[in-house]
Image (cartoon, rainbow, N blue to C red; front, side, top):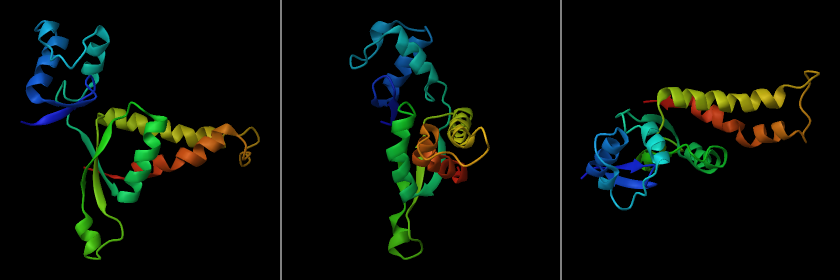
Length: 165
């Protein structure tokens, strides 16, 4: 049976259980039918409504290099712990054949296109804040906004330049 990521369970859930949870959230059935491993609360209702599987919103996928995925894997959770994403495929055969130096990867974000675009805007704001100095000069190296840009600025470049699928 196909499974999908459930933010309420913080793990994969089968399609039947997902449907039951969605039906509870939509008020079609009673919460007593929710699987035992999910602790129900009214907060769960809002979390479920935002999940792409609640409305069958297709996942947003991007194609990037393996090194870029490794950077995302390190930095996105630090900056945005509630942005779920995962590696779907990685083509190491192309590297083994000498056709490329870095394995192309497909990464799936559990975000709508609008949410992804908002993420890009937020990441761009990091650069704007870093270089928005009163005199228009290069920011001081000790400036916290500039330090944040130095650490996270690459995220915008990776995601902006990624091939959307």
